[in-house]
Length: 91
Image 1: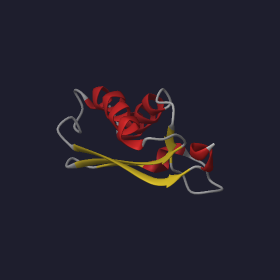
Image 2: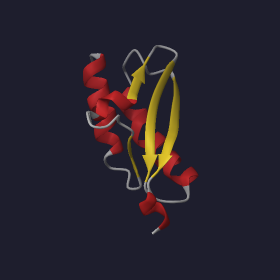
Image 3: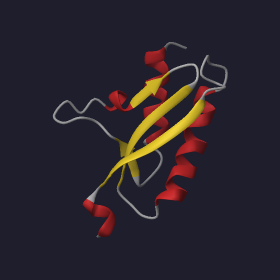
């Protein structure tokens, strides 16, 4: 699997986790920009749209980890970083 394919699959897996979305710089909006891959760390920057955050991150980790199985990033540490909290989380 190429890095581009891995990023696409990670973003796809996160789409199934209600309450989180990839953090992308505006106005570009390319979700893959929220993912950094290295052999040591896979980092995903996220925006939370719901609270509480810890259970959302647990679900995100369970969604992303299988995507990495069998790839060169399989043993990388998974770092999920909430960079912003959407106002909808308080609604």
